[in-house]
Image (cartoon, rainbow, N blue to C red; front, side):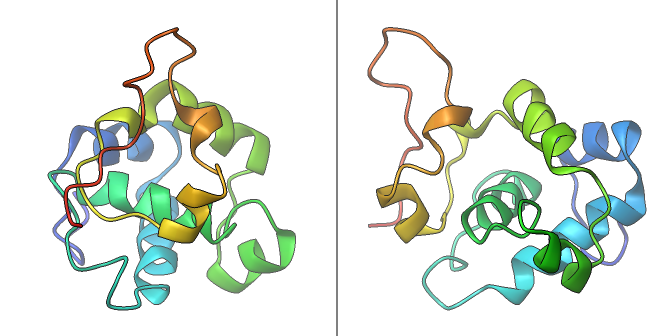
Length: 125
């Protein structure tokens, strides 16, 4: 378990199993570094899922320069596949990068169903 951040979630556990605790910590540190008082007032029921939304919004894993800055080593393509398969962003109930959400960054991580209710729920506005 990630003692530094006290992250206790199935999402975090699965990420650690598939990558490493160090990689999960790098994701958490990156997300926390982008907290701005708007996107980090409510983590929701799964703090690691919140971290996934923030690093996606800020492109911390996508851009090589950001990966290097944050010490993230998981390849972008693997990270993206993992988030789609295990991130469960559709059930995230905390803050997100609201500009990224408005720009549609999270859309590709939502289930590909005809159900129009599959969007990140905003419970903080």
